Length: 559
View 1 (tube, one colour):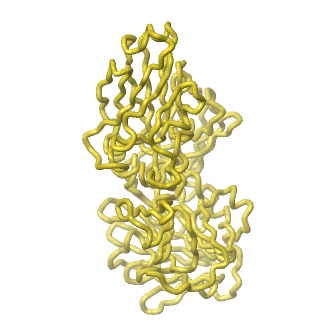
View 2 (view 1 turned 90 degrees about the vertical axis):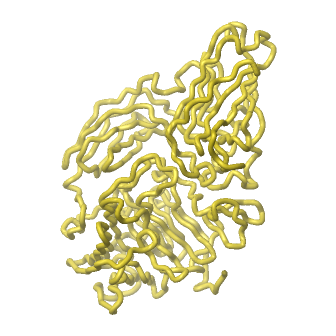
C-alpha cells in the first residue's frame, strides 16, 4: 500500500511541543508574513470557499458539508489521504455553510443539526483557527482530524505504523519485526504536558496547537491519541471528547480555538498556546457559545502548605460545564488559573497525580477569586503514615515501578519491556524497580513480596495498603500472607471500562485497597521472611494482557 513520495524529506523529526521547547525553536509568529504576497480574501469555486490568508497558506472548505478539502502551503498540498478530507469526527453530512469577512478576519460557519463548527483566517497568518460547539449527544463530534498526505513527513515514532507490521491487538496495536510495538494511542504525554503536536521537515512545520480543553473531560493528566502516521498518510487530532479511559462525563459547549499552524520548520509561536492566546478579534464574530476575556474570571491561591517539595503540585478546577488547571509554584505553592467561565468549581490539589486536598471556589466574570493559603492536612497524604516498609511512594502514578515509563508509549508485549514476573524482597534496595507497574490475572498474578518483622511487629495486627491508578475488567488485588491468612475479595472501585494498560494509559480513578492483617498471620521467627502474595481477581477480562489487570501506585505495611 505504499506510494510515491510527494516531495523530498529533508529531516525526519517528530515533535510534541511544550512552551519550553518553543522558546528555543525557530518561531513563526501568528502575524509573521509568509514568502508570498497574495491578497487576503476569499472566493467561491462552486464547491468550496477558497480562503487566501495573504501569507503562504490557501485553504478550502466544502460548501456542502464543512470539510476542509485543501490545505496548500507554499504551493504544496498537504490535506488528505485515502480520498478523505479533514473534518469533525468522520465527516458531517449535508450542512449549512456560510462565509463572511470582517476586516482582517474571515469566518466560515458550519451548521449541522445542533452542532456548530467554525474556521477563521487572519490576514497575513499561516494559521487556521477552529472552534467546535457540540450542544448535546444528538451529533457525534468527539474529535477534529487533520488528514495529511503520505510522504510529506516520515518518521518511526511510537504512534507510527505500517501495514507490514503484525497486528497484536484490536487492529490498532502493531508489532514491528524487531519486536517493538506501535500504535496511534502511544502519545507518551498527558494533556498538560503538550501545547502542540505535529511534524517538521526542518523547513516546513505542520502543527495542531491544542485548545484550553475547557469543554473536554478527564482533567490535566488525561492521555489520548494525538497523532498517527501510516502508509496512507498522517493524522493530527484535537480531541473534543475521548471515550477511552474516561473518568468524567462528556461536557458540552464551545471548544476552541485550536489552531492548524504552518511554520518555516520551527515550533508554532507561543502566542498561539492555550493560556497565552488572545482572541479579542473574535469577540464580535457571533460564534455560538463564545465568551470573551471580559466574561471570564480567575482563581488565585496565596500558597499551599503541607506539600512534599520532591513533587510537583497541580491545582485543578472542575464542574459539569468546564475544567481548568494550573501548576503550583515550587517555592511556596502559589497558583493562578485564568480564563475561567463563571460558576462554582471543585478545586482539587494534586501531589503528582494524587488528589490530596479539595474545596470549592466560585468564579465571577471579570473578577479574581483569591484564596488564602491552603493547608494540606498531614493525613491527606498517605506517604505521611508511618510504615514498616513501603514500595514506591504515593503520588498517583506507577512511576518508578518496573516498565512504568515504557508503558506510556508501548504495548506490554514490547521486546523492550523487562519480564513482568519476578518477586520482590524488602530491604534489597530494588523493591520498587523490581516490582512490575501492572499486574494481570493471566500474566503475573501471584507475585510474592518477602519481608521480615521484629518480634514486636509480629505480635501486632497491621494494615496493608495497595494503591492503584486504574484497572481493566475489574481487576483488583486479593492478598494472602504466609499461606495462613487470605483476605476477602475486595469490591471493584469505579474505573473506566475500556482498554487502558495496553494502549498507553495508566490514568483512571486512584483508589486505595486496605487489608487488616491479624497478628496470627505473621511468622514468629524473626529470622524468617514473611511472604505476601498478591493475586489479581475478577470475573471479567479475556486472556494475556487483556485479562483483568490493574496499575499500581504504592504498597505499604503500616506500623
